[in-house]
Image (cartoon, rainbow, N blue to C red; front, side, top):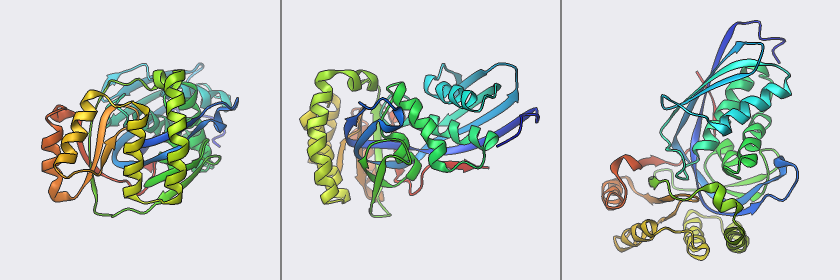
Length: 310
């Protein structure tokens, strides 16, 4: 840990992949936020968020946050900054700049990526001896108490295609990685529409999610493959009734064209579709009937989770 921030200014950078959830089960009853979270399954994607944090000596805590060159309130990021300042009893001025390919509020893990990147960068400056799990716990805490997500951060810490077998923050929750074809590509299309906080706090939605999630997560753990993940994700989307009309129509068109390795992104007015490289243009063409071109991303599964960069 740095003795003091006598260096008048120091900057660190991190990159965190986006994350797509296909199915989940809510576990948020524990009084300790580190033990809240979700079981479920999803995958990290190569597109994500680069976060740069500059810390300057200051008598009181201040935080300025930008997302793609726009100043934002950034409550999830702000919570991470405040928490670390309080834990280390170290006031400072922080400038946090997120440069991201991930739109906010569409289910692509933008808030988790921003929170984890912020924690990685600040901890590198003030306590570089921490493990990745110790650093990531602060990001998970911020996501959970702000009702922004339950399982993105632990997934974004490890990367790959994952099943979250036990809920909780990194180091407490447990993750099982699943093999997948290295050449596979994924097309994402998404827009705002479903509010994560509303869904996570609505009793009717929670009940449907947890009943479906309990059964499907167990089935997926027993048969952990990419195709079974897609099958369970589609079943989950149907049972929970979370699909918007746009998502239903897009998935129907994809199925009719033979691109059935697809499902709804949790939680968003959004879909994902796995395909081969030579099919990307066809998948994109179908999805562009429902989303603007600016709302469609082509990427791949990220093998690794978030980390520091130069």
